[in-house]
Image 1: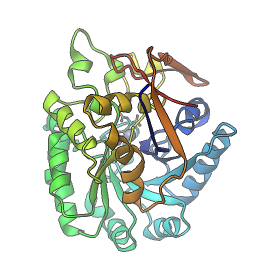
Image 2 (image 1 turned 135 degrees about the vertical axis):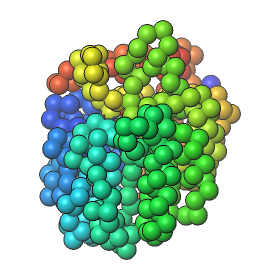
Image 3 (image 1 turned 180 degrees about the horizontal axis):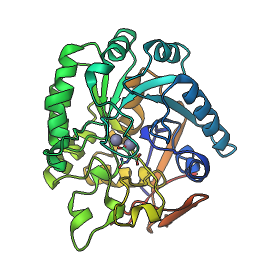
Image 4 (image 1 turned 90 degrees about the vertical axis):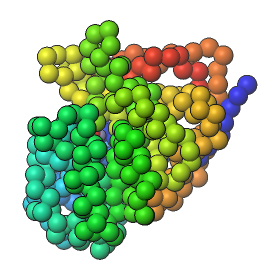
Amino acid sequence: MQSITIRRPDDWHLHLRDGAMLEGVIGDTSRDFARAIVMPNLVPPVVTVADAEAYRGRIMAAVPKGDKFQPLMTLYLTEDTNADDIEAGKTSGLITAVKLYPAGATTNSHGGVRDIEKAMPVLERMARIGLPLCVHGEVTTPGVDIFDREAVFIETVLDPLRKRLPELKVTMEHVTTKDGIDYIKSAKGNLAGSITTHHLIINRNAILVGGIRPHYYCLPVAKRENHRLALRAAATSGDPRFFLGTDSAPHIDPLKECACGCAGIYTSINTMSCLAHVFEQENALDKLEAFASLNGPAWYGLPLNEERITLVKRDNPLNFPSKVETGAGLVTVFDPMFPLYWDIAR
Ligand SMILES: NC(=O)N[C@@H](CC(=O)O)C(=O)O
Ligand SMILES: [Zn+2]
Ligand SMILES: [Zn+2]
């Protein structure tokens, strides 16, 4: 029987939502992950340290009894964010990162940043105090093709920003292109990237071939096959600049299966099984721990988890539910389109 024991993993990019949805999904993360960077794109967004403190309380209250889970809180950067407030959040240990959503780029991002100039004083403060900036790296310019949004963001927003503020620590979240991977590799320090489970598995055909498949639609949208291969090579390389951020983003089925469906794929429940499968396919099971459990804490300057988990390859495929029930409604689970055999021994 094949098995592998690794330090307990963390998820460096996660959407937990709020209320009944939070209560319905939190257990799928806290079962398998010790910590997660929790995205602030609620309605209304988490913009102040007080908001983050209250949200953290609601998350902790929803964690199933017996699970040990630590949410790492983020703030949603706006053009009005107060530099003293975020500094206080970092000093108290509550805030792990600040999140930049270009306005209109993704779910609940209309309150994001339109003019990066307006955010410069806060970004300068972050560079000074060593608070990382997490970015949804896509431009929203109407003339730019949606498949090119990430590459154009790197060229027109991220690279100029990093040249202006070389001390600012930036996480390029959910990297989806070879351009993103190459940019991170070529950068001299202060830049790392998270990679999702689903972008290692699907290319854009999953969304469009044989009919339109809303449960494979997320942002940044999956790209061509050569990009998926670049992501797989980076994730399985052991390079410390790449780590797991599932971007598990639950939306109830009626909001996915409609004329204008929401972006987001729900992977919390089967991520570790999917990843073990991918890493085995790439002959890189020995690099899974680096990707899921070592590189992220090293980048964020946090201790490694001491607990271990063991993944076991079963003889028969696992039975993950195709949907999870939440008090908010049904949420479809990511279907990797291959059977999953790797199971977390409990
Ligand atoms: N990834 C997604 O497709 N959706 C995320 C937002 C995001 O991470 O961009 C969501 O909040 O639903
Ligand atoms: Zn995003
Ligand atoms: Zn996200």
